[in-house]
Length: 501
Image (cartoon, rainbow, N blue to C red; front, side, top):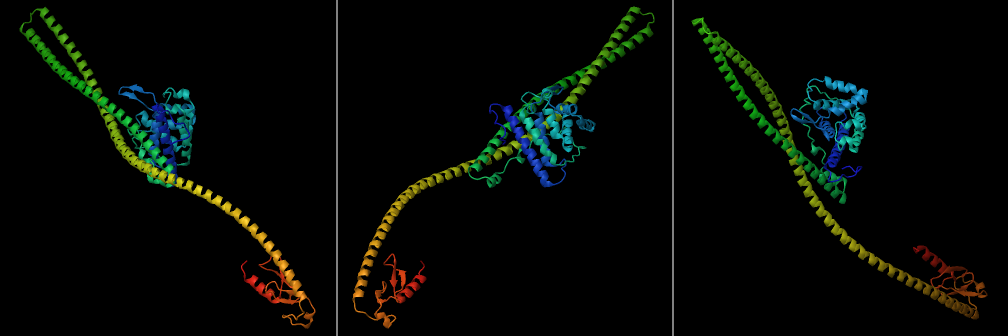
């Protein structure tokens, strides 16, 4: 459905009809353009989307037409508004002249259909429609004030017709019975398949699309039901009129038969009177002149009566011929209405079937949506529980971090205090080593080491000369670098090199 116009008042059926016709025009034009571009060739008269486009345009032009009374009843034709284009746009005169010259077109409806086809082939249909829609004062002669052509939906359709200029059509109208074609919209061409919509949307969008289709089908169903009821009422009225005309025709036939019998009787009486007068004149030449005058007067009256009867007979025969012609036209109209009624009933059954299928899909979608909503509610509940657990874990994590910081600080203070104590003990040990007797360094075994000061290795606790204790490395037991012997220095370097950190 279209969202660029406000939704009509549900209590205004005319506005709903206008919106539905505009939606059908949009779907028809869009489908025609897409299928024509995919087809990639010139369209002909047998192309189904093109035929449906003309049917939809015919319904749009017929919406809100003022009725004209004729011998057979009220007649609605959109040929009158289309003739205005010739007056407003001179270049449209060629189309109008071509339509009037086409053989086989006997009704205004057929001429209007031919005009639409010629305008589409010229790629001027959109321009011509905009021209007549802008002349509301002239259109008011043919349309009711709330008709589609008088409202904004007509301007929207005229704008949509611009897209048809991209397609090429070659329509041969010779041999086509444009006067008697039944223009019924095939709604099944525009209904979306539920499987197709499920590929494009998920979740709530899928349900919304199905519900929109269901509402649209119900609206079409109501519209078709109203159309069927109207056609049924028209058929009943035509049947009553047909029965009445049949009775009048039977009465006229009886009247003609009686007049013919009376005419024969008058002829016999006239011939008898003439023969009697002749016999009387032969038998008695001296008969009374008064009797002869009365006989002549009676003969004159009988002759005048015969002429009157013959005139009345001719009148009755003419009325009989007119009634027979009317009967034939009514029978043809009834057949057309019956065919349209059968097709509408078939489409109504199809709409009911589609409506039932969409109802089933809607119920299943509602059940799926309810199940999904239950799952979502349970997941939300679990999410809330997880959120509370996460908050508790975060608080515990912060508490653990604070405790770790306190432990690190205590460890640092402990190491610092322990390092100070070790350093003081090392100083005491060094002082003790200085006080002992001089010895040779056990590592280098140099005689000069007797007189050199000695130091204790912080790693192996051995006492060596200053040359062997020249290296410093940080030890696990102290924060600052300490003096170590050459052997411990090499071992510690290998140990630190093989360690990952």
